[in-house]
Image 1: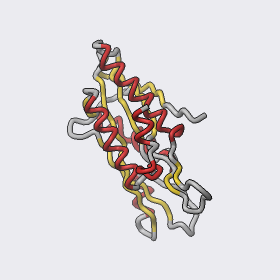
Image 2: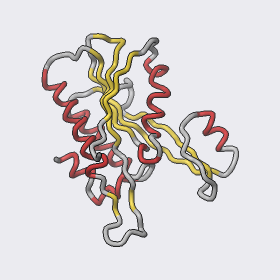
Image 3: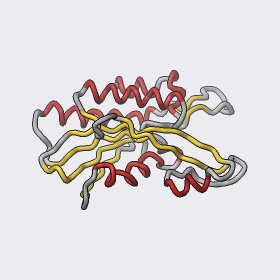
Length: 193
């Protein structure tokens, strides 16, 4: 309940990707992972920063995270968002196999044109999914047993803008962990459906 309450609070302004509320949410999730004793996926940081670009608003087009697409978009007038996934890992017995348990922490932000409450708080989409993933992570830690496979705890940013965080994560995970024939099993929680 505490995680849902924090993430859905008006102070986070709906956690729109690339905005201040989303960055505050990411810092909060890092503190939750640290408190649970879960190490960062990468030695140096829990954050996996990435950029997404899109054409200017007057032209139709989706946000892109692929480096080639970003390079092409940057040649003209474009929009840019800087975001960061939050990633932790619980080491398993099979060091070359991974299970990814993830949820997105961003939401829709604020809509000034809405009558009444203008903040999309996102308790169901997807603060509840984030809370469930954190509870799974804590259960692994408190069991005192090493899981069979490495468990990556992933909190993705930019999902409401086109699954940007998970696309970026999966596009670079093999290179970043320097392993070949990576076997990944994925459990992604979206609890608003």
